[in-house]
Image: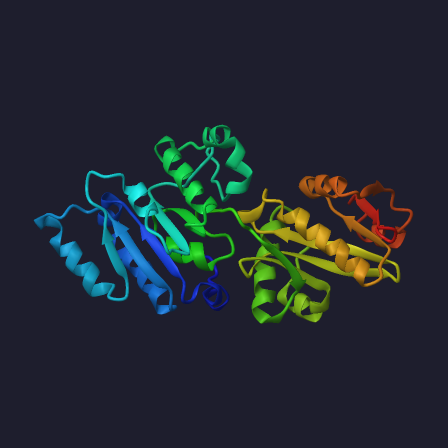
Length: 334
């Protein structure tokens, strides 16, 4: 079961309004799962609204009664049957987040789960982007969602596959369970601070260890070298990290660069490396080196002006990772 970071994520969500939208069949088939997740949100002080389109007939009266009894803090809105469910829900204003519960993940044409959609990047090429979505029935709704976000009527939208704890895992874990849609991912870069930050960094780094690109870093190591670690945050939540390792008086190593899967491909890595360069220069370093066998990171470093070097210049450091390519960037004259 994924680790829940309730304190950290609740701090961002408490007092804000979250809508949960699910069609009749999904609500009926997964009634207890959905109710339990909404109750969990209510216990954290999150304001909730449930949208559904269950027909107002005798067979459904039991469900209406149970919703009222089990979710007294939640505003329950029924979308009239026979109308466009998604459009009706999206016409509701005042929500910080809107969660659509669906039967499947939102995936691309190759069947890969789509973690994040930044509407800024698809605004001018919607039709090409929309054709990459493998869920044909959801494409028109996705366009409407993006429009509502772009016009400021909605902050965030989430599309989740219905399953046990899906809402809880989407909002309170590092990786989430579905697709996040927004147009204002505002990154901030700051020193690591506190026990929860340390735990989040450990969790993010573990995502890369299985690929063999990062050496393991336990929480004890991070706590002992806290001043070296910096975090990138979005919406106040840690989504990436990097370690500034002193090599000599003029050289710092860029190490432990990791971004959560959810935000890969959203230029968060570019932001993090550029922010690291600024921080290294502020501390008086003139050179940055980085050793990596990760092809994605190698490509990123090359785009940002790092040059592949032989190990002669920093032979002692190279000897610790003899088969790992070294990249170097001069920053003193920038």
